Length: 247
Image (tube, rainbow, N blue to C red; front, side):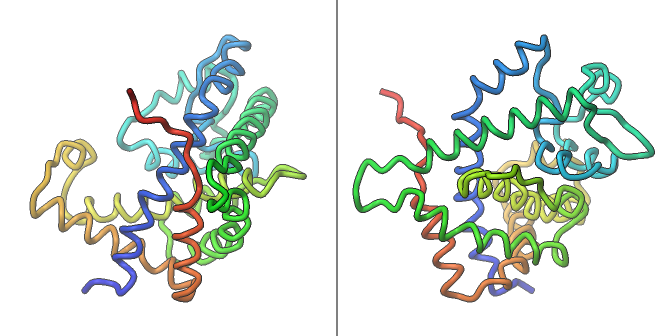
């Protein structure tokens, strides 16, 4: 049976993803420079930074998080940024220093992207202020409806004095894991492996898995009423992403 908010979950997903990708894209050069200055390359710690700055992450959660790409635990630890202790990944001293700097870069990128107002009709950072408390409520509600990765990667760390844009950026990243857990559960229930779902093309089976993903993701949005859901969708949709159409 479908969920009444399944269609909302389907519609808001690409809106959230667009903003996440926009912040990562806008900060990419600066983040790579931070790593290059230390003779390092970005690893799993950059995908978990907001959680790792707050708490250790169980290795089972990280394994699920990277199920599509995989990773080498020994090579990961060899960079000296994270370590596996008692079944959990945690930051080392140098790792905490580096990802704290990454957090500042990402927050500044979000502020730049979302404050841009090429037209006075666009809300700019006012949209951030409208969306932030709603996303915070979704993260709280997700503790009941979310899967293992979402629960392992929340709560997220908040830098003292962080701007509303920086706070929204890390919370949107965390919210994405609610749907990611739903998607992993949907294709696993269909009897597929990670490789098989990645290779699966359009068709009835793909549509069924996406519909199940929407159904499993939808309950988190029950935390908002109909008007709040509209405000959230409109606010996030109004935020610019900084992408340019190639000439």
